[in-house]
Image 1 (cartoon, rainbow, N blue to C red):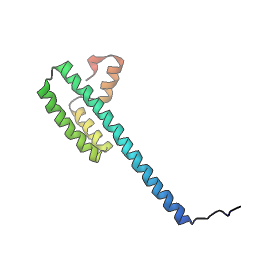
Image 2 (image 1 turned 30 degrees about the vertical axis):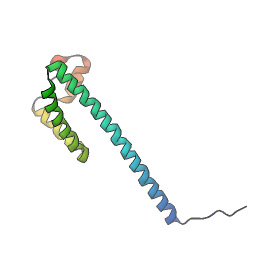
Image 3 (image 1 turned 180 degrees about the horizontal axis):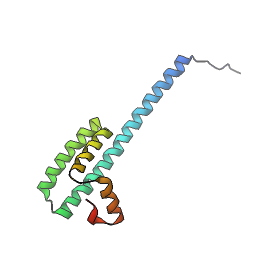
Image 4 (image 1 turned 180 degrees about the vertical axis):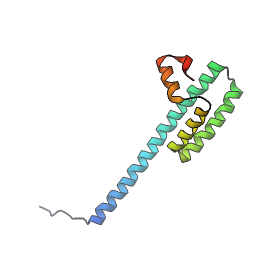
Amino acid sequence: MKALKTYSKETVDGVLSRYKTEVRKILDEETKKIFLKQAQDVDVITLFTLHEAFGFGKDRLTRFAEKLLDIHNYYENRYSDDDIFAMQLELEKLGVDIDKLEKSLIEGDDKSAI
């Protein structure tokens, strides 16, 4: 029977560290792919809604999509919950409470949505 080769703690830690780094990189790449696909789906739904419900044509949809893409690019590079919270506060200043809006829409009471 052959003797088992022993490794130093530093060697094992180094291998584990490289493995964790590689796994993290793969997970980050996959997460980004999923996020981008979900963002694209939301963009399609948003553009379609603007067209169907409010009559936005190609020009207005294009201008809106350009601004939306600017925001996507900005947050792709520096996403933070604080940024989303700041946007939510700005909407609340306009009288749009997202939590109340979603709740009233789910309950079917669209008169009190905003």
